[in-house]
Amino acid sequence: MKIAVNTRLLLKDKLEGIGWFIYESLKRVVQAHPEHAFFFLFDRAYDESFIFGSNVTPVVIGPQARHPVLHYIWFEHAVPGVLNRIRPDIFISPDAYLSLKTKFKTLLVIHDLNFEHYPGNMPLLVQKYYKFFTPRFAEKATRIATVSNFSKQDIVRQYGTEPKKIDVVYNGANEQFKPLSREEKEKAKLDFADGKDYFVFIGALNPRKNLVNLFRAFDSYRNDENTTAKLVVVGEKMWWTGEIRSTFESMVYRKEVVFTGRLKMKELLRVVGAALAMTYVSLFEGFGIPIVEAFFAEVPVITSEVTSMPEVAGDAALLVNPFRPDDIASAMKKITFDKELRQRLIEKGKNRRQRFSWDNTARHLWQSIEKTLNQNQAK
Image 1: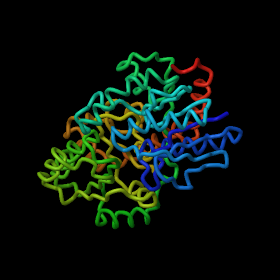
Image 2: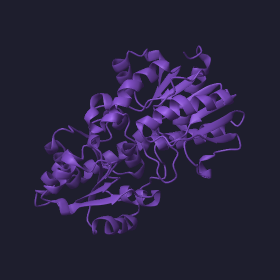
Image 3: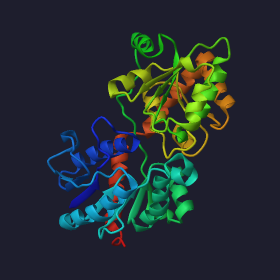
């Protein structure tokens, strides 16, 4: 069987949430099925570490698709031509983009519909592209996979997609995240927070990650004279403008906020493992991988009570209203002063994390591939 896959987000040392989904699930699928031929479609020179087996043939297709106009050219003109030459049994697109011109069966992975709920959080042209094409992609796809029951129901509500057409394929988390020794924690605190306790945030610094209310909450938290913890922010400043920037600049305790930028995995494992808690209080998530990473690191979690995050966290995190900074600050104080609560959350996280592994992701993705192959031909 020939399986073509859109792998344009496999970028060396630049994997984000969707990139990790592609990397971890495809690596396992390819290696579990050496009897099948895989064709990985890249939009630029690829790294050899992404060729997961001798049954993978890399294909580089220009132009580099990182702008709505180039997305259109790549998916609607370049990709169909290559697929016509390969003639795959199925085309898998795990980054929510599809080609409306492909003649082959397709499995589309939609991670979330954030742009339908918070369209102002992205550039206008990107927003218009998503809003125009995504419902058409959803209709065109032979089958859809998504990463939570929340996202499945959101796709059904937004686009009227038949629920039976959608499979839930939960994300996993990097199992390199492990608890640190006391000595390792102290060293990490020295390196990242001048030796102090700290809360950690991981993610691209964009509006939906709710840094505005996290900054406000941290100011409120530090206003208590008994609190000394810092806030460590890990991620690239995608949209460091407007309200995010002005809120930070108006903080009383902005000097207690540490920005690390993007970290390599070795440092990421340390900064999470030594944290007082993961503060992941997004306004909207299709899944929320850092929640599970914290479970593996045996670090308590504060996360939002909205969208998919309660589904992922279960009872193993403190759930807060992300629109209320005082609610977030209250949870931070509980974590700081209640040692028994921290330990209970850690124990519950150890149980909860067993639901989410990349092995499970790959197995469920393969089941979705098989369902796609068994359905009628794509439109």
